[in-house]
Amino acid sequence: MGLSNVHSFDIQSKRTFHVLLNEPMMQLLQPLVEADTSLGNCEICFGLTPPQEDDLFSILSLQKADLAIDVEIYPTAG
Image 1 (cartoon, rainbow, N blue to C red):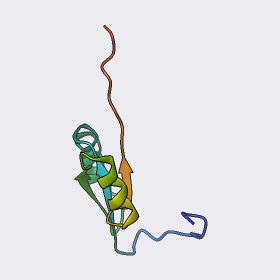
Image 2 (cartoon, rainbow, N blue to C red):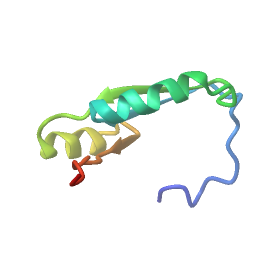
Image 3 (tube, rainbow, N blue to C red):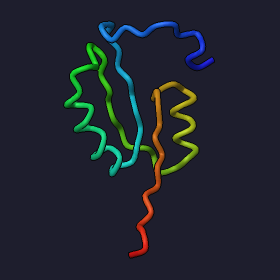
Image 4 (cartoon, rainbow, N blue to C red):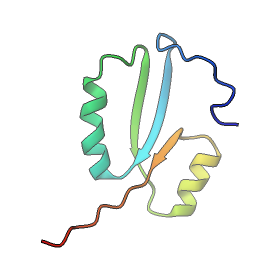
């Protein structure tokens, strides 16, 4: 399962990837993706992760999203 059966990936084929993440990560990644000219006909659509972890697992298991990035950002002691 996963990527073990993928032998090549053609960026010229139309494909939309749905990625769930928190708002700080979206603010960080969305401008980078929008500026990336190497994506070809691939599109990355960002959405916010749901507040409940069970809802996130459900969305992923139903393949309504391709990827979830769940990163906590903790303040550092100064």
